[in-house]
Length: 128
Image 1 (cartoon, rainbow, N blue to C red):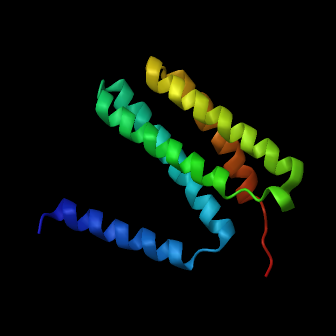
Image 2: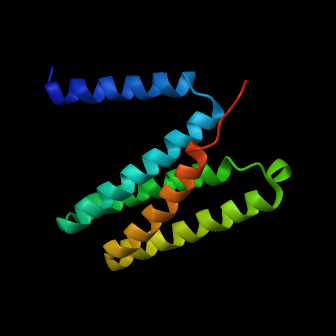
């Protein structure tokens, strides 16, 4: 077996295992971390002129933002959930613009917004 394929397989199994054991709070943390990672990868591919790969990474980041938006509970979250939804929608628009214009500064902007949300989310203490 190719060592790189084996490593990918291990990572995939490990990620699925982590997801199966994660709390809803941890799942959101994982999504946010994944979004930040995909945006960073998109920036790297953009800087290297790898346009197809850039599009793939931005599409993955967009999918993650969609997942974060879908996870919002508008009944319990009220106005705060609406504000998160608006922010996620804004980030989606900006990522699409970054993809069209090859503007890495827009990727930095979205990354900074998502990092701020993640830092706040990470600071939440969940007691069971």
